[in-house]
Length: 509
Image 1 (cartoon, one colour):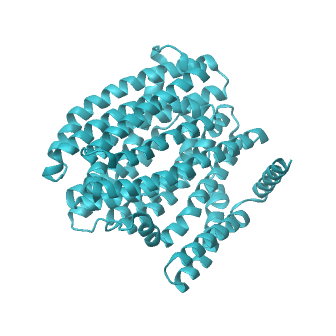
Image 2: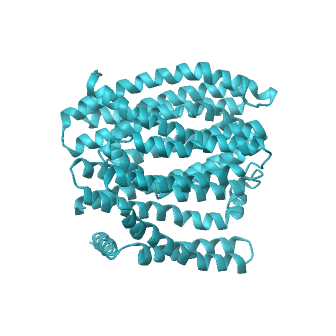
Image 3: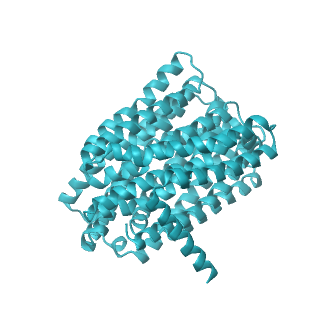
């Protein structure tokens, strides 16, 4: 991988990290205030009702993956006329998807909310209001996606970072506005969140149309390209719908068998999970265009090297947060929320473990997407992930406690990870033995090493602020040293040292 590409990935990762640190801090504070303002019941209602609309995200999610792949592929081949055509056809499809979402949400979705969700009678009207506001938010989110895909394909992560910061500041403003009005707080919250999404869409569209020529292209229809995108998207749609069922549909399962407080606990787990996993996802976002561009340029060896390095990087960026949080989750949630709902602590710990295991797969997903041949990948991996929903329903109906849905999810994530490697061997000639020796085994060694000191502190120091800080610091130091010395290859350590020295010299100049 060239030095310029490496520096670009590093720069984009740092920019996204700066964005995420601010977003995470504001988001976690926002959840605390919103939970206290709305109460556990209303917060649970918001999560389950908005989750019904989010279930339609497989439509836009599938198209988003296709857009990023084709935009990056055209840029990798330096075919700018084709890029214009691809953006135009893609945006036309997004408009059609938005219309389909509205149709489904106002028919099937509305029937489901009215007839199947378990909502306290006195909050039914507020739930209906939230549902309509969520539809508006989701439609504008769909129309934002092609512009975000274009930014990521161009690797201009600073734009992505700055607009996201504006968005999270607006959401923080909602927190301070809620107590100022005598209106129903749940209804007001849904309305203001929709306004933020509309503003966000307007900003992205304005910036992209000024900066990227393809975003100014007129809507057009290309039958051949449409069929190609549709074929690629249809299998991505299956994979994305499976992702929705793996996460959002479980809320509905819990709603059928348990009270809204359990939904609130899972909502809190999801918030912490999203905040932490976004660090790994940011790195994956920064490296994704390079993986696709290397494949488009026929540089398979460079792509393999980047995939190996990225798998280790995404796992490490998740692990440095997951280890101390899992050990000190009771302290963290009580400090953050004061009185976290029942199950919130255990739910959050298991959700973090689940996404930690899955984080190593992010670059593998991108490698599969780069080939454009995703029928086998999506059908097999998606089929495995799809088991999460029926198994969760089955075990909950048999009387198991709500935590069972997290154990099921972890088991399925492990199984899907193994299946992915075998499919990549068929798609790319991917070496399973190389992946085990260069990724799995080095990571396992560093994890074992990093657990020793934090666990000793956990068992021999009493619960409290002192133990929290000692475990946090020791986890960071042990994880960092273990990853550097045991997970990185000699070549990767040399690259890391040169990048660090270069950065120090630049700062001292």
